[in-house]
Length: 212
Image 1 (cartoon, rainbow, N blue to C red):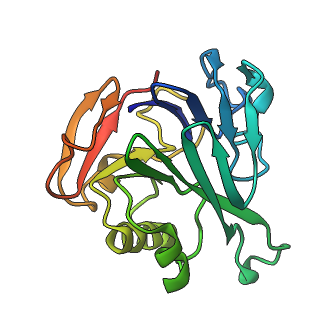
Image 2 (image 1 turned 120 degrees about the vertical axis):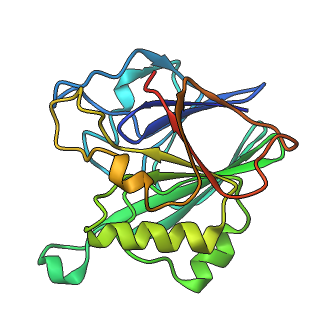
């Protein structure tokens, strides 16, 4: 399985059979997503930075909510979580986090997770090898939620997403302080991540990917 970070919350997951892209985004903040072609697109929630499906060519199969999906050798489960909290004074909206299983590996994309997972949700997600987590400032409440999620799911690899290294015009956080809070980190950026069932690290390790 080959994994590439495409910017913001978008990643591509490439197997021998299919290409899946998560959360394709628009260029409203001046950050352009390079042209992509895929067989499957998942959308975590309705936002221009997470649901610009028209930017992906190939007439992909769209998955945009909770449920179980099987497409060739990809097994995808969408788990619904609240996107906003009650005290934010707005209507609650849905975020969908996805577990994606292919080639004997399971990866999990949290989308815009903003509430702690319940024990039932953790059991439903089950064992995962790779977890994509949105970067949040250490002082932010969501950072605590992300830390607790990593501890609960115990992935072998954590891939930070949804951040900027200072080359974009948006207000995404810089990841360096975040990296210091998530344990073992390989800070040497990699262009892509190639994983199999046999080359996973023994302990949870965060791997930084460069935007493709």
